[in-house]
Image (tube, rainbow, N blue to C red; front, top):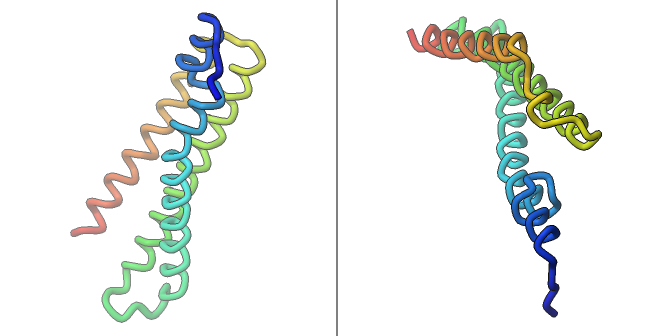
Length: 125
């Protein structure tokens, strides 16, 4: 079965990032990465909470795990909400350039990411 598309429809299907083939082609790796990241965050928080007062190796490891899991979970949740808001605004007809994240949003995201990086380095010492 061959489906013939006119030029406008072909452009919409092939080049529009929000068309159905592109959503499933490009969004699936993102969904998989988010699922893995959510599991890792959950495992960090759970493991840290279980061994919070009686870690057999070092007493600060559970605190490190709980903080990394909590802040990482917040960052993932923040990114998901931001993506959903962008997706809704674009599909309501707003211009894509107007729907880009604000400077405040970018700064908050960068600060949380920098905190996670510094916390990771501090946990290695």
